[in-house]
Length: 337
Image 1 (cartoon, rainbow, N blue to C red):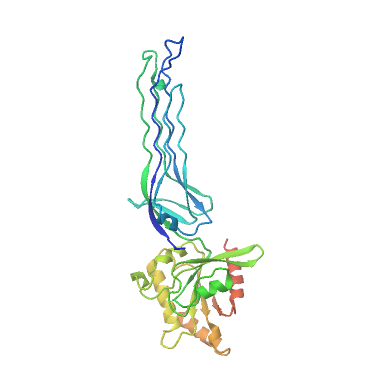
Image 2: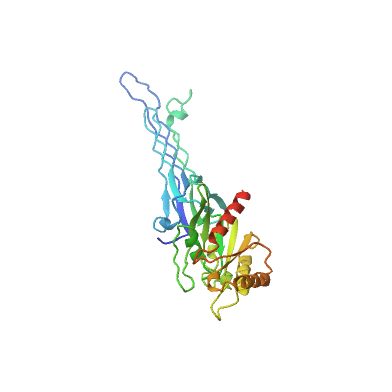
């Protein structure tokens, strides 16, 4: 399934039903008087968060949504039926804004949350409403009003507790495969991850957290290099970032400390507070180093970065150190609730 995280749609609320012009005409009742009923209100349009959805791909094929209009009033003082509301399911984490003005309308974070995006038109009045002591046979009615119509921009920011950042081939996808049931593509070439993946990491019977894996960043991503930074917005709601670094890059592929600084610079350029968010350094692929050289190599990288936060040594390929890291993450998230 294709991953889509931005889309523009149009929503039209229902029109209100017209009021009815009618007079009561029955045998033996020569002066029945007016009996035209009011119309029904138009239906509203709501967006509803659905945790079962994780992409906006359905909106690529249908982009116009219209609620039902209210029915017209009828004789015998019958009021028209109100138009049914239209409920449009969207993934949890969707941010809604007006496509024309850019005005923020709201966001849907929790499963089942509703957001009113277009209000239905009000009903028209039947001629019964206008009868009086001086106007016994009014022929006046009012039409129903049109419902709201607007173009909206939907932007998905996936919900996760922990986000993974790093260069392509730093082992982010391998890590999420090792600690969860997610199965992103893994290969020995860059940019195997083309869109975000979510994985649920269970560390106990009733304890778990969600990890988001996004495509790797390279120097110049803010200017569009590689896959750019368009997927960084999916880390906006995370509480912790794991910065994965390859401790044993192939000869000529770069220096781990310099590569880590380049990723940090891209986070700074992106803004939205990602560079200031708590970030742990995860030195990956230690299985490629001799047992005796691992600690020295990792200490050298951390010292070069002048890293002040937690540092972890793991091998996502073999699973070494992954369980301890996940336990530490779970404890940290629990303490920060």
